[in-house]
Length: 104
Image 1: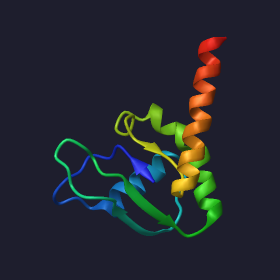
Image 2: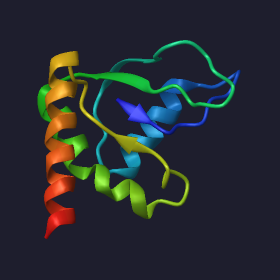
Image 3: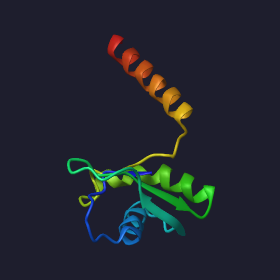
Image 4: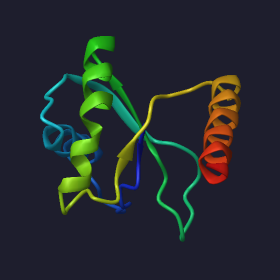
């Protein structure tokens, strides 16, 4: 899932997603990409991207830190698609880690 991509009324989402993936030095085959949720004026909707293989997904996520160095996509970040249960577990783990860091 790609977060932080600005939304345009006449956007070519496939080209924008391909450009993001090229920025992280990966050129996988994009099967499908679409915006998630309803349109809101103050927020950019995340983009769900379906790639051709799990290896491509792993490579893209591993290289996603390269987006911070790209001026055009410095506010964009990538995350795996998680189920509701996985998101809850991940959120708890992040909160535990933050609390441990604060106490040290």
